[in-house]
Image 1 (spheres, one colour):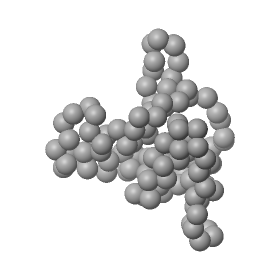
Image 2 (cartoon, one colour):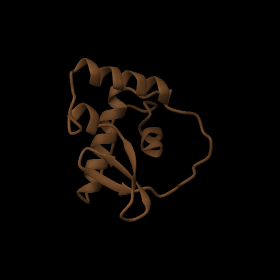
Image 3 (cartoon, one colour):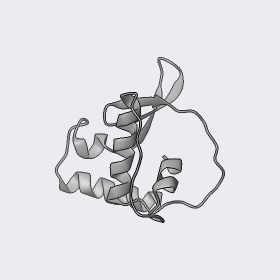
Length: 103
């Protein structure tokens, strides 16, 4: 699932002609980097950056990653970065809780 999403994301970046490291098609993806200054991993998305917490939630099933999943990742991380909350809304059984836990 993640490999298929990564393939589609890279194809979208190429098709958009995005050749800069700060293009939105790239920075809106959840990425991890090793920060040499703190000798630890950081998670970045858009302008938000969080320390990687090494949480292990088990080897559960993977969600299908859709454009809506990408949007909630961006929205939720930006809200957290700004010290705000987020409350995904929608019909029951649409994956709100699973998406939040996966993030």
